[in-house]
Length: 320
Image (cartoon, rainbow, N blue to C red; front, top):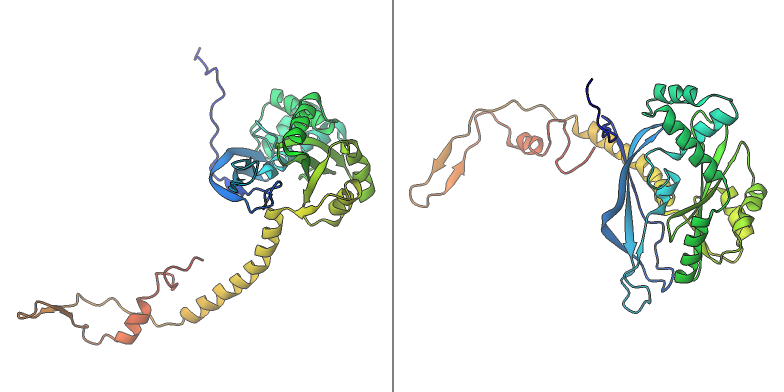
């Protein structure tokens, strides 16, 4: 009998999308100075989601103000918590799918495993049960560990920064809302519901009003912003930088696409230039200077223009 490896073999995926997550904070929460981006990733891993495997990496920032009491403090890209839990290589959408299939569709764990395998998720029945228990813990209230972390964050920073995000997993008939703490990188809790409004989110988040809140984060969804404002009316609110920049880039991308298409049409009309024989070189005996002579019948004007294009008719330095 062949001896099997005791450790879990490393998994390789042929096509993996990349998602680099930036720190949500732009300014230091203590001195207000602009935070400086740090070059290394503070975390990276490959996460299996229902949309396919994703390579996730988080970029951090630090306060470089010498007059700040928290100078040198690192602030992390905690929006990765809305993709997967810490120390987990499965996406939150996978957890929500397992919870929905087990509780609403009344499917056994082995049936859920088979369905996930059909969707390309590499998982066994034992891990499905583990992920289901993680999902139940995620829906539960703040546990002792997270309470301790939040208390330490309040003591260190004078308060917490709560971020709220929602996602709708594929094959799951409900929405999953995740509340996380930005400064400590802690998942506080989650809410799963088929339909939710600002009042329901407010009632759910009232359990966390005991903590002093320095600020709140979310995307531009009106329901999330209204709920955060109702629970913490005095806390300033900021839109998530990744969502904001993504919305801006979407508009710019439309103009960029039109510009690229126009350049391709304009530059694609240039005539083709046949390859010419080697150009003879005349060398002056007195000054030893090389003088190039164009080949017979070669149009220097067209040659100059065509030399500015690559094989696809695109000027060098432009990315398409």
